[in-house]
Length: 301
Image (cartoon, rainbow, N blue to C red; front, side, top):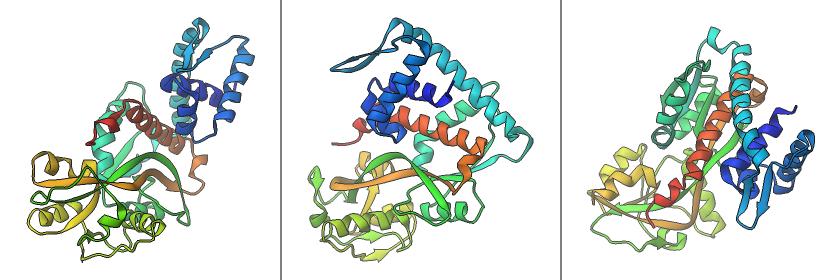
């Protein structure tokens, strides 16, 4: 039995769609369809029924699902135990404030389940510092934005976020703003080596625009305090500015075509370590559930 076939089946049932599950697994749809057919052939039953609205479980599929979930939980627990996680130091995970807000509660709930052998030491930090931490061996993995390949590091996409332009509430904004219009505003930006700024710069270049900073400043908390008093603007994902927008201190507008991706970043070759694989799978599972819950649909229009 190929354990990855079971994971493919589980993801399809979670999303109710082969297309959505393939995207979450970072494989193409035909490959995932072949994996499901292999599993059905191995068991000699049809697990899923295809329809215009996606896929639904057959009677045999419903029976298989509970067993698959139990099998994968046991396999992941055994993998971690064999890796000796409980006997050594906890894995060091770095998270941005946004990742903390999105994932920490559910992550803690999963780690505290009876029989779970994984142990984590979690720290919060700026994006660039987290990447440096993994690169220098101070962290085992991190949730961060890595716009370009970084020597010595590898990454898996967890989710994609809309970026907003935000400023003082005295200046109403339309619901959406073009990159060209955003480029004309006086901007407060992070340091040039900040990877989120680099991702935004890349998007500007793709639109033949130059990203120019009226002021460079580190730390979104300090930037937000400045924006409340000065006629300046910055780029940020929704969770970074939600409280200020909802309280009326700032206004924001979605920048068309401006998206950033959040990754789980590990040292190159670390996928060979079972305990690293187990944590990466857990983070991807939690991120996929967040997306499946249509969390992003609750962001401002």
